Image (cartoon, rainbow, N blue to C red; front, top):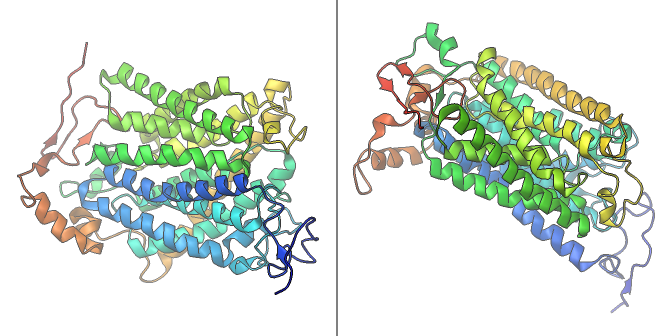
Length: 498
């Protein structure tokens, strides 16, 4: 048996990308077990964000298409995870020198083992790759909600895989690879506002516009433009709340582990994340009550997620005493974006564009305003690398932030439109289901499970339920209760509270 010696100095990556010989060398020796444990546990916690989004979207859908969202979350977790292994990680973390995109030198996670990652030398490549895989799966799932009750399943799967290839990985290279042009420019994006939120939000806007408004059994073609401004009540607010709680829980790791080590900065990021979610939830809820006189679980959850979106680029850069403000301001911007989206006649009922697209842009700008140079230095590695934002009188930083936000928004929207146009022209891959299938629901069209569920809904499983009020439309583009809206025979009324 050969003697195993600990690694004391890493070889040049191009000479030995694995970092050494695991048979004769202890490749664990240079790493702190606390860092490894923190990142590994955070990876597991981040993974559950993807099915959590599926639960959130399922609750927000009408019952006839809810299970399709759970199915999509499993697809994103599985297919996008395989895609990440085959070539995704290589596209945005390859050690290339161009400013646009990586190569396939790390395809299949080849040459990805013990060498220090580009994100932080405190953790190995393989661990950072595992952590990064959870980002692309949850981003794809955020976008998947845009098919909202009318998109065909197979074309949507193809689109999601193409979108992650030509949008997510390109933008991730721009911002996270040390040679990416936005990274070199000096834009701050701590945990993925651009590749995750802005990209998915503007991609969802493109998808919703390409699909057109939803229809119902009582809706004529002439009425579709008017129907685009009508929301439908979520069929299961409990699932909405459950999904939000799981996302909030997972976002501690999503942001906290983006330091790529365990440090004071990690703790600071977790505190910032929590306070921003609190500020976002309170901000949206107060606006909702001010305008409608009532609270709602959906509104509170929307505010919490808006706060998480706003703090994503800022969590590792801003002082803790402004994080609640960032969450609140972002939630207010998202609230009004959701309320007035009917002006562009888009049927985007899950408000992916309003919360993730608009919220991501607002979060980027607020990062440039409130970033402080000493916060990143808490990781024990960055030192004086960062110059802060307006907080340190670095006035140009907001310009860098706007450049990053507009780049991500424009790239995602334009490329998404191109991909959707091409896919829709491929025989057998048109984007939208037939009218009769849309009226009956995607669950009945695609899932065996829907038959048993429908029987239980209409009387089985103990107790008779009242399906006629499910999916009733309510006030245009607002996530709060409002004046009665009549469409066919479905009517809702609300009472203004004193």
